Image (cartoon, rainbow, N blue to C red):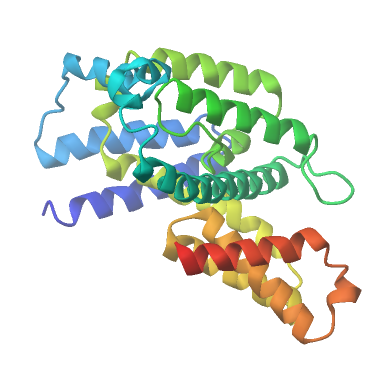
Length: 282
C-alpha cells in the first residue's frame, strides 16, 4: 500500500486545495499541505522524526565554500598552476551559462507570476522589470558568497499571488518567515513529498492559465510557445524551455520570411547563437 499511498494522498491534497480555493478560503495551499501531511502519517503508521541536529545543516557550507573559504590555504594552492590557467576559460564559459540560466529562469517566473497578479504593463511586460532583475541578481550573488544554494525566484511564488500577495509587504513577511525557518529545519523535514506535491501541481495550473493568451492560430508564435511549454517539464528547467522557444521562434520566423514583420531584435539573434553554442559545447 505504501507504493500507491503517496500518489493517492497527493491527489487528495490537490483536490482539497482546489475545493478550498473555490470557496475562497485563505491559506488553502498551506491548509492542504498540513492536512495531507497528517493523513500520510495516520495511514502509513509511521512517526515523523524530529532531529534537532539538522538545524546546523542550514549553515554547514558557510565556512567551507562561503566568503570565508577564500581565506583557506587550499583555495589558493593551485591558483597559478598551468591547469588552473587552462581551466579559467572553462570557468568563464560556465559563468556565462549559469548567468543565462538564472536570468531566463527569473524572466520566465516574473512573467508568469506578474500575469497571475495582473501586474503587466501596457506592453505585456512585468512592471519594474529592471528592479526585479536587480533584486534577483543581488540575492543570487549574495547567497553564493554566504555559501547557500542559489537564491532566486521560483514559480512557487504563484501560490502566494493566488493567496492575495501583490505588494512588497508580502515579500517582507515571506523573508521574515524564511529567516525563522533557518532554525526550524527539523520541523520542515517532517513534511512528506506527497504533501508538498499538491502545492506544486496547483502552481502549475496557475502558470498554465496564461496559455489562453497565446495566438495558436499563428504557427510562428504558437509552435515556439508549444515547444517552450513542452520542454520545461521534460528538461526540468524553465531556462531550457525558454532557450528552445527562443531558438525555434527565430528559426521559424527567419525561414518563413517574417523576421522583419515580427521585428526580431539583434539581441534575439545573439541569444540564439549563445544557446546553440551552449548545447554544442556543454
